[in-house]
Length: 304
Length: 304
Image (tube, rainbow over all chains, first blue to last red; front, side, top):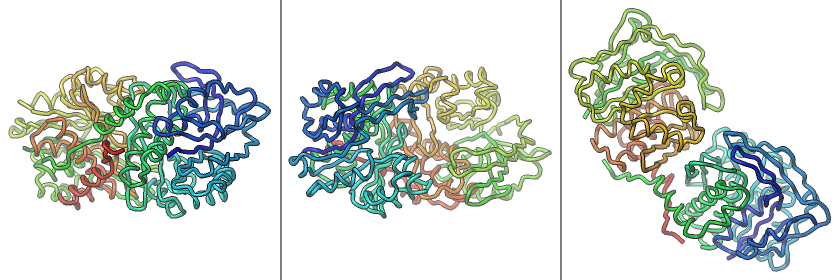
């Protein structure tokens, strides 16, 4: 089963302590798709301006990303310029130019409306709600969000949260949304408002998956060098959703496995600029890293 | 086999968002002992002043902590006063009065000199070296340290590091000591200088155990409420060393199990002030939390 993603398709210019990249493929929909397509075909919904180098999306299309839902509008594409300092934990945004993205009204091609696995990446919750209303019978709807929407679109965001099965957000956003400093309490607050799964991402400190009765934790893979952290969260979501769509299994144990696939994709993407590493890795690289995650956390509780 | 600890025996006054405690048992040796004694007898080496309420140590003694090495000196006991704000991640020290601790010259009772499992808690590396020279044939020597010694006693600390089997330190200290921001690189730097095991503690973000060829990660247990974080690191070390001394098994797999026992003790101690919770919990509470840790990180890599 394929997975549908609605999000930004951008051009990023990034500076890290290890180098810089200019006008490379960026945006949540690109990262998500490049990660998810290793598992299953992807339907991408987004908008680019007339200046977007669409030919650079060809490797994604060739792998199985359906670009029918990628609108080309008159005007400039969404551009983000950012910088990471030595700790690599938080991006400093130098410039955001929304361009055609500011008038984005996602409209799903008819053949996308029967999508079963849907990821509403970080866009205005009103648009996320609008997309949701265009989908006939989804099996799993997940959404992401960010501090800006939590602050400026709280009622819409809460409406959305009431309608999705799963939400991903980082630890700071979870605290901001729920006003609970403690993540267990924050997750419970969200679970009481709709989603049956809450994924809290902690960057280099890993990720929690909360359900009503269970907590699962996946560490971030301890890489010896992190090159560019941009896109780690969306790549995580792509690996996670891609795995679920491929297997069609929403059991707790398979969702745990999906979190690890997501963590693997997050660990690959930060090894290079843009989606470069996601295009290089193979299914067997992913399997090997999943095995590495298993070795990383395994212990024998029967000893002693 | 018993475990020997050399460290501070203090009186703490602590304020957290959830309450305050005055002049309660504190110091690395107290926390370590209260955690380790669940696994194995403990030999404690330290110093207190003439004002120390030694009767409060009776529950520890009754459980198996040998206090023969606890010197009583004329003068004031070591006192620490601190406060935690809402994030609970870092203590703000309001006052430190070293008292008799400033002239501490650890002298091991003859029957302690054959100790096989030794924990040199966070004291001046010169004293740690001196203690080490009093021990005849240890099987496993571990040390802790802190930013103050890294800055002011670097040559002594490096000499010590060359003589221990294992070092525990937190992520900030590892970065400070090695001048590597990346923890994998930091651990490698330390491993090249002597210890064959490096334990890097990340507080609420868990702990890494590095050896030359392996990395193990243990999350911190996701507690719904953390009451007072004081002593988590020393309780972690106590559980870890206690388990190893009890089992006498220094294999990689048993050390992983020891890290989890340590993490369990760290998760208990923060549920109350001082060593209160460590005195309350039973062996079966510890086993249950170890099982909780197992559930927290387990996933089936064969799925899909």
